[in-house]
Image (cartoon, one colour):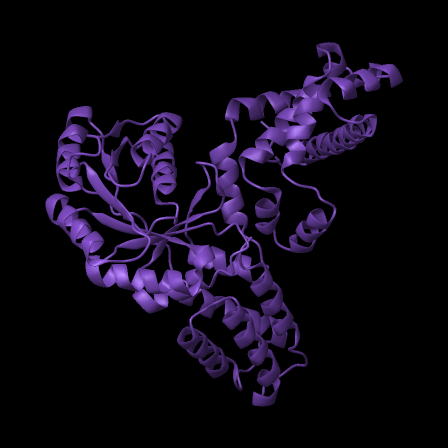
Length: 448
C-alpha cells in the first residue's frame, strides 16, 4: 500500500524519543529531521512539510510528558493529531439534495481512472440504497461510452447515453429528465478528460456546470502522479470550484504525498480513496483513520465497516450452527477464504489491524498473495463432494488425482489439507471459548 515507506520512517523517528520529563530542542532535532525527510520522500509539498514539522516542534518543545505517557507516546499523540488535521480533520460526506436527483459531476485528466471511479461510486451509493443513473458525457475517448455501459451492467444501474454526436452539455441536461422519469435519486456524470489541462476542456466543464448546477464536482486524481496530482487539483479547483476529491490507486506503490498535501494546498477535502481495482474498492475517506494507518496504529473501524459490507448474515448464522455441531468441512473452509477475499487484499486487511504491519511484510516475503484463494478454490473444486465433506478419506492416490485435476502439485494439496486441519483446530478452540463465555453470562460476537 501507499505510505508503506513513509509509515516505516515515521515510526523510526518516533522511536528516537527516549527518557522522561520535558522534551528538549536537542531531543527533537534528529527525529524531526527524519520526519521531514520521510515526508519529502513521500512527495509531500515542501511548504506543507515545513509547516507540519514546525507545528510538531511548537507543541512538543518543552511539553510536560504526562505520567502515563512516555516521550515517544507523547510524540505519537502530537504527530497523530497534526497528521489528522493535515488530512482534513474530519470526514466530509457527499452533499445530498433535499429535492432529488442529487447531481454529481466527475472531472479529471485522462488516465486517472475517472470512468472506473464512476462505476465504483455507483456501487458505493447503491449499497446505501440509492438509485444512481450514470451519464456518458465523455464523447471523445474511444470506447468511453461502452466502458461506462459495461460498468453500469456490472453494478446493476442504468446508463444514459446519446452517442458521440450530441454535445456533453445537452447529454447532461437530458440526463436529468431521464433520472426523474426513472425515479433515480442520484445522477453521476462522467465527463471528458484530456492529457493536459487546457482551455477547451475547462470551457466544456464550465458549460456543463452552468447547465445542470451539480451539487458535487469531484476531481479524480491518481496517487501515482505524486505532487503533479496536487497541481492538477489546484488548477481544476480555481476554474471549477471543486467540492471534493477522489484519490485513486492508493493501494499501489504510490508515495502518497498527494493525499497529505492536497487539502492543505487546495482547501478541497478528500471524500473517497480507491484501494484496488474491484468495483467495491472505493472507501470513504476518514482523516483520523488514515493518520492511524500511516503511523502503524491500524484502523479497526474501517475493518469493521468492511466486515459489515461483505458479510452475508445468513451465511454467518449457518457457519455459527456448523461450528456448534463441529461439522467444519473443506466447503466451509473455502467459503471463509472467499469471504476474506471480498474484503480486499490480505495486505490491506492486515494494514487495518494494529501491530500487523510486520506480519504483512512477512507474508509478502513468503509470497503469500491474494491468488492463494484462487489456488485453494481450484484444489477443492477438483475434489469429489465426499472428499470435501470428509477430508480424512483423501489418501495418496486421491491426492495425486486431485493435483492432476487442477493442474497443481501433490505438495500443494498437502499444504491445503494441513492448513485446513489447523483452521479446524482453531474453530474448536473458538467453540470452547464460546461455551466458557456462555457459562459466565458473556456472549461473543458469533454467539446467538
